[in-house]
Length: 224
Image (cartoon, rainbow, N blue to C red):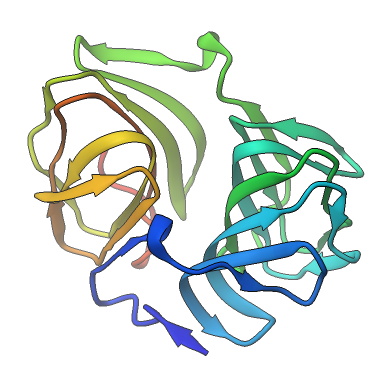
């Protein structure tokens, strides 16, 4: 299965309009934003857990990254309510579940073998946030030679200058409404820009945006 699988091309998907597709586990469904492969695939998806659902124990040979959007996601390492950011490195294994139900933004098989340590961050903690100016605050989530991940909070009326992304970037609107690369993007919209792109972010009413950069080319991130 190939969905937006050519990383050299831009992609924009309004995830809120996609159908939920059943997974092999009862009560677990997916909205596929990008995918290259069958059940084991390089993928970016929205995954919904019904209350009291679980996915069988499995290995993440090339890692897993996710942001909890709704509810509470659980596994052997803890319970992660909405707002938690988690990275499980290559070779990790777990049995995910949710008692009340959950929705997560998840990225699979996108980590190099050099990544070793798990990451657990509560993005609701105000100490995680850095104010850049009156219109922008940033919560750094992960930084390595191969990529950088953060959350951006755009204040109402924010209109940022276009940034250069020599190694590509992607954005997911978690809350609110924004313009990403000149396109309107409501909550649930995922955008991917290939290397050598210029992208401006703006929001009339305010927005919370997940941003990942430096992972679509050779080397590490070069933009702030």
